[in-house]
Length: 252
Image 1 (cartoon, rainbow, N blue to C red):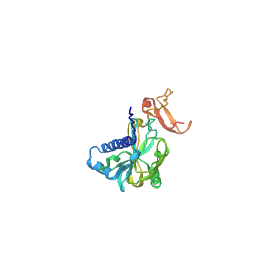
Image 2 (image 1 turned 90 degrees about the horizontal axis):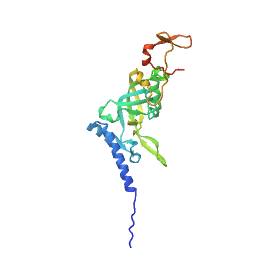
Image 3 (image 1 turned 90 degrees about the vertical axis):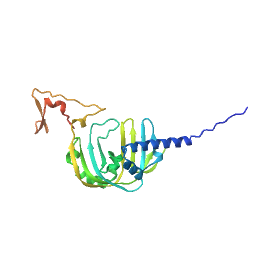
Image 4 (image 1 turned 135 degrees about the horizontal axis):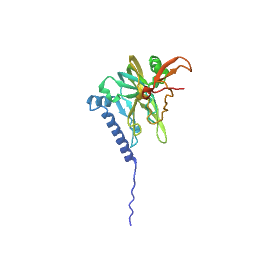
C-alpha cells in the first residue's frame, strides 16, 4: 500500500497575507483622497508603504510609510486641549496638521509629532498664550506654518523582536478608536504667523468613559461667590440658574 505524504509550507501564505494587508491599508489611504486623482498621484509619488510593518485584522489596521523624495508643505498647525477623551484616546493635549494644498488631503488631520523637532517645538511653545500653557482650560491655538517632512529612524516592535525602520508617516485604524489615526514626523517647522486661538465650550470637558463629580449650590441666595481664597477677593459668581451650563476646572 502506497502512502501519500503532503508537505505544507506557510511561506506563500504569509506573503499573501502581508500583501493583502498592505493593499487594504493602501486602499484606506487612497480613500482619504475622496476620489481626487491628483491627491492619489501625490500620495504614490511621495510615499511608499513599508511592507513588513503591515497589520490588518478585525481589531487593528496598522502600517508605516517612508518618504520617497523631499516634501515641504504650507498649512495650519493646531494645538488642542480637549478633555472629551475616551479610554482609547487618553491624550487631552495633541496637535494636528492640515495642509493648504487640497491635493495632499490624505495628510489632513494628521497628528503632528512636534517633540522630534526640539528647536521648532520650543519656538512654538513660546508663542502659546498663558491660559493654554498654565491652566487646565480647554481650547485650541493655530499657527500658519511651513512643514518639511523627512524619514526618521525608529524602533519597530513585533511579537518576538524589534528592529529599526525609517518612517515618515504612521497609519493606525483600530476598533477602539473608531477612526483613522495617523502621525507625521517633520524634519523642520517654520512658523509663518499665529492664525487663531479659541477657548472651548462645555462639551470639551465632558468625560465619555470616566466619571465626573457633580456639585450643587447649598445656599439660600441665587448665587455663590468664587473667591481667590477663603474670605478673599471675589473672582466671579455662579448663579443657580446657570449650574447646568458650568464646569469647574482644577478645583482644589
